[in-house]
Image 1: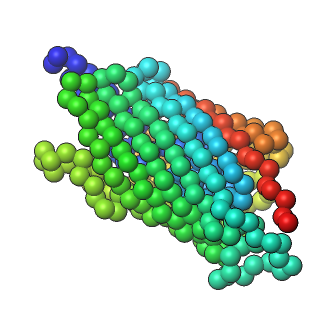
Image 2 (image 1 turned 135 degrees about the vertical axis):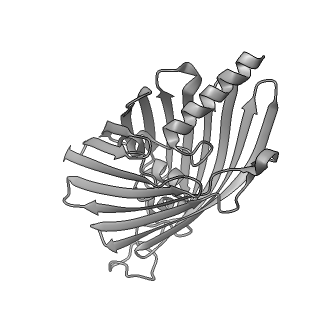
Length: 298
């Protein structure tokens, strides 16, 4: 029994090292994973709405996705994920481009609802997450909120559930060129265990995305857990042709280099990412998303 507890502790430590957060924000989608695990400023991607609910506001079509991740080639460190995003209503075509303070022409009339589910771990220790988010676009600004139920389970010790609330925002400082994004995870400081008053990490992320050209996207983000050092992340996405994306990134606190590719064919988006930790080795992630055609306007 003691060996099981020790092994569970090792698995938790490995997971914490990978994310620098332990039970902090989940990682969603191989696109973000290939870009240094940047989560605040990506958009036009259903997985981005799982990391920052504000990104949901820019989605104009229903999207569903599934993903799988393995850390350090250990079966006990597998993650599977599900993402669904559903726009609520569509706007009639507008003759003029929107201005600040007016809902964007392509944005859904009543915003976008997103649902996520994720499971990490194995028999000895596991985490399950269920999330519900909402995003809305108002001109060049997107806002969102998200509620997540996290359950942690230890074999022989039972399980524990907590609810974490998050807020997010994105703003196009220079339309189609420069975007700012920020998220605050666990603003309610949910308590995970009464022992030593252990709480979920409260994490602030803030980042910038600069579209240097139609083919090049540059990203930078700072992530700060209130109880840990800040983590600086950087990413580069290059699209030599519209259907193909090549990505690279880094995360300073976890000493990880990341890379990946993305392939878009019709309604399908396929993304693969790999990360290398100088001590623990290789992690890999694959995600697939399907985007439905936009319904015809009456």
